[in-house]
Image (cartoon, rainbow, N blue to C red; front, side, top):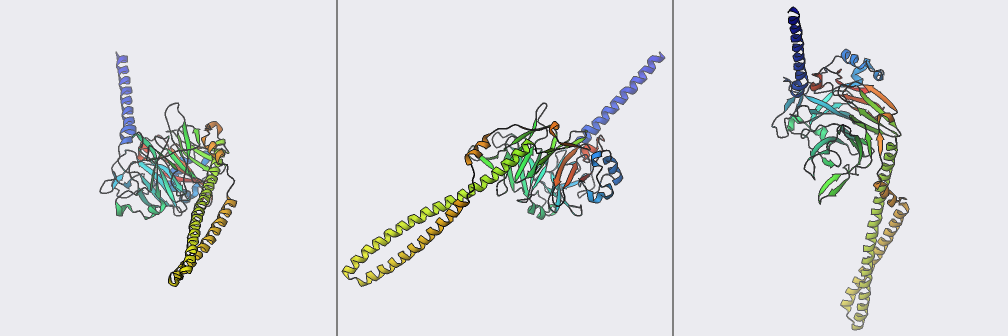
Length: 481
């Protein structure tokens, strides 16, 4: 009897523990994961979540971060703003600001003077934002409220046209379903933007639907091209990264379909492992970032991969083709102008010939007044003829000069190359080197403004993840080099 009673007590205790555990898991992973805590803050928070000692403890577990100068974290890290609260809007049409306490860092890019971090509201109640920070002081400058609630999975800076590109979603122009978009905001508009004054989201200066993606998880900029990829397509399915060229004006190259639908189509594509958070390209190598849940994150480098080599070659060919087509356009315009001028010259010659015949007739009639007017008209026509002949000669010289400088380009071979479909892969086993970092690494980007520096952005400090207490928090952008 006593044994049965003890057994029941043990079972009751186990049951209470199970219920308590389930309740905690629900609270930590469901309720807290999808519910924002209240805040008394009225401005975007800028204080760190961790002390420097706590941060160093969390980073010291990783050998690949052993070169980090932990004695000077004020210069080798940036406190991620807005983890406690972010000043934003609860929808584009909101009349006033709203505080979000579940902003989740997603993307990072660096300009000559600034560092930008993108973040989205985990409960999807608030507009996504960019945090703007000073590269010299490492201090927060302001938040830039984006239109809508895009995941903003990554951002990329086009340093040629000074635009920041943001991974967004929108309506598929053909099917009406969800589709990936790449939107941009100009750096000059960002510098002038003041949310406290406008109480409106900043305007995108470009929006493009891109083919082949329901959502864009990450983007990067390299040699006037955007490289776009996605994080996870589903069990047993590969992820991939695709190249999208930009035109001379800084917009995506598009094709018109169904009469008036402008869609950007990608070029080379490489199959990559799932759970990729970002990609970075530079001369001779590319870097992929992988992160999944509570597992350690990975940064992998691929040196002179076949994908990289062919991409570099195609970018060179694209640039040569653009130059070639511009030169051909100039030559064609000169030929058109030459044809027009030569036709004008023939017309002038006919007029002069007619006036010469009239001149003979007026001489015979001794019409002195009419004869004098005709001589003046004839003189003007001959002058116009001489000027036109000089102009034609100048156009011919310019055309010959352009013809002599026309680059040697095989247009047919280029068009054939565009139609080729090659399979590329950038997989774990192909990586030349792998670095291991803390969990929930959202982005690693390399800046070459001055010294080469690697910027590591983690999302573990976001409320939805720190509430789980399942990974070590990193509440700063780490500058690793």
